[in-house]
Length: 201
Image 1 (cartoon, one colour):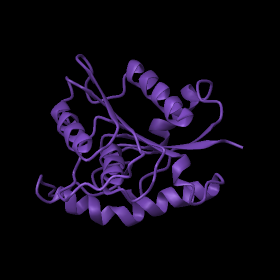
Image 2 (cartoon, rainbow, N blue to C red; image 1 turned 180 degrees about the vertical axis):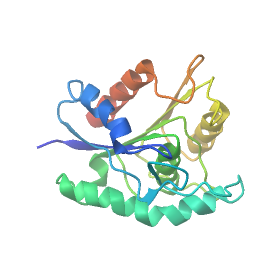
Image 3 (cartoon, rainbow, N blue to C red; image 1 turned 45 degrees about the vertical axis):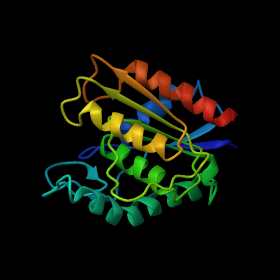
Image 4 (tube, rainbow, N blue to C red; image 1 turned 90 degrees about the horizontal axis):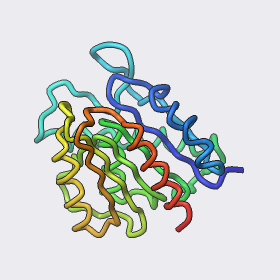
């Protein structure tokens, strides 16, 4: 029986298989951890793949509302996976690992404090949250972003880190000078080490 569940959250227009390979790489580093990598609930409107919320007409102003509207389907996806892996309602044994739009959803879950998660890792993300942050006091986070990201600027993770730290989140950041909108091998290893630390605390 695994002692924790890592749930991967892919980016827009992708699918669960995209990040499942990370779980394969991490299996030897995190031997007591189960991994799940679902498809997002909604089909991507502009091609193959899936999305957590629609990008049609999205703006800085309306993005937080899109994320709020996506919470119900997002949480239902997580709860279904938790039940499948024997972690029903065991939020304190769940770590979210997001990339891009998946990171937006993970950071929203962190900022809203809906669940007492064991940890959150956000690659190339942003905090699309326009209210007062109410995070759970014991959920740590790691934000990793490349300075060469041409899709979501690295400054989004910088500003997210500032807001989350101000709200009391124990948080680490890693900014990689040459990394674009992707997960580097170095970032993946740092995330695995962070997860191991989360499970020791």
